[in-house]
Image (cartoon, rainbow, N blue to C red; front, side, top):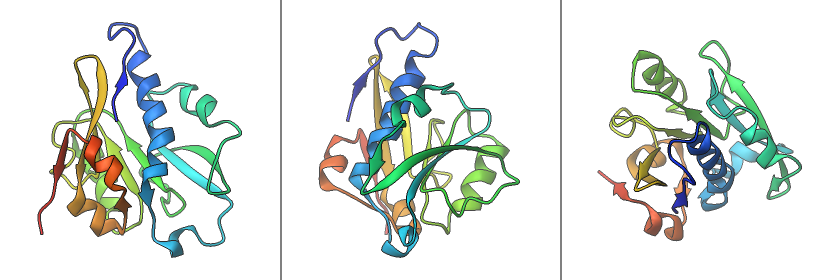
Amino acid sequence: MFLRVPNAQEPGAEYRLKAAFLHRIPEFVTWPPSSLERRDTFELCVANPTPFGMALSELTAGDSLNGRVFTIREVDLSESFDSCQVLFIGGPMDGEVRAYIQRVQALPVLTVGESAAFLEEGGIIRLRIVEDRVGFEVSLTSARRAGLQFSSQMLRLALHVKDSP
């Protein structure tokens, strides 16, 4: 899944495309049924500070996935992540990014980040800009730990799939 960045130098263009990716990627992921029981919303969480501005909220406004309305929630480390289905953690790999990953590793939460070491630190999807496009890499090991499965269609589009038993 590649999305072209219209002008890589244009402020915000990269994150508008990454917001579109976050909005669409859940269509290709299967969560454990118990994690979605009794839910009427599908929560996309973004670690503060959000790089998306209003782009993610605008893209998901009025939209739903399997009958669950998308909601956007900005979070920090002091909050609970139990209601998040997706957690975007932006910025370079540092102690705070590692702390977010550690907090949700045992939960059925799709972690998405952008730092070079994101997958090695336990993240599930790393977004990258390659030739003015947004591409992604996947860690199947981390996905399995979270109880998540990806469609084969999505895995074929990945730049790299990391899998270790």
